[in-house]
Length: 97
Image (cartoon, rainbow, N blue to C red; front, side):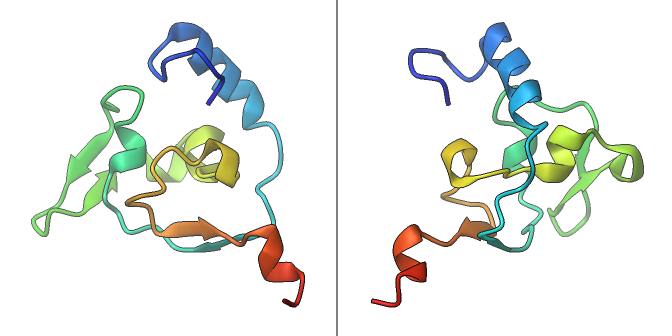
């Protein structure tokens, strides 16, 4: 997140769109847990619903925005890392130490 800006700040939303023009970090691994946290961290997404097992479901999954489909892009912008199933390898993981 940009220092000094709250995540629901309108300017942060604009910045996030431009950030997501970058490719996904190649060190990302894991898979979505369908918790819905990423769909709620700036505002409650109107397309988020929950199934009978309390798993998050996107009503427009097939045509969702690139910001949604690429989240989390990198560890730097991974705002839901505590609950998300995606993780990123640290640089030290590549050093062979």
